Length: 267
Image 1 (cartoon, rainbow, N blue to C red):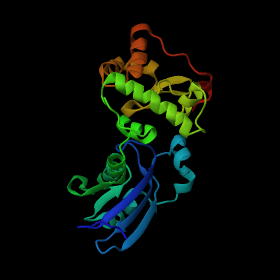
Image 2: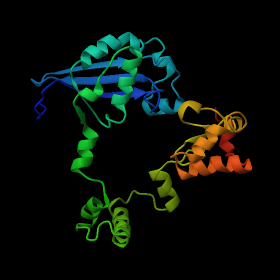
Image 3: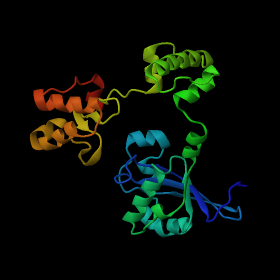
Image 4: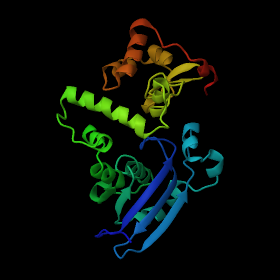
């Protein structure tokens, strides 16, 4: 029984998709539980043909391949049924405000429906988690060092506290890596085909390509010849410094980062 007074039904749902862009990507699997104000629960799930290829990186996450969904209905085929299930309900999920709701809203819009997410109540369980159990330095000092963080937000006090927390974490979690290189890989796994830490530039078929937005999959060399304005837009834009410096070096000096050996095999 959900110990929460519901003014409307609450649909808690989760999505598996072709990627992380609400505008470009498509839903492959949608599972939802509708909780009525009287406490009754109804479950539904849909396995969908996204109508676009499922990238291998996405398949690694959810295990769904093009072959699995080739004979499944599309979102548009099921839109009426899905919309009816979500009708007049509050929307809930984990990180749903940033991911699931925008993606669902885009799918409905493509099918000619208006989810009206901005007019509905939202319940993002991740926000509850972060609100009730903060993950800032003060909370870490309290958890690992058992004391209050005096001098919080002063650079010297914060730096000392950070190091003390790290020392304690290494004691508390003996399974953590024991070298700095292994720890870096553990915290942020590296993909050798990514030219920058966040994978905005990626090696594909031996070429360094854009890995985001409308130019995704386009090589930097071809952009230098055909659309240098786009590269200048990146350099002047609100992007990570690493990405901007790689593009700037190409514009100014015609240089690209060294191609990793794995790049020759990347498709």
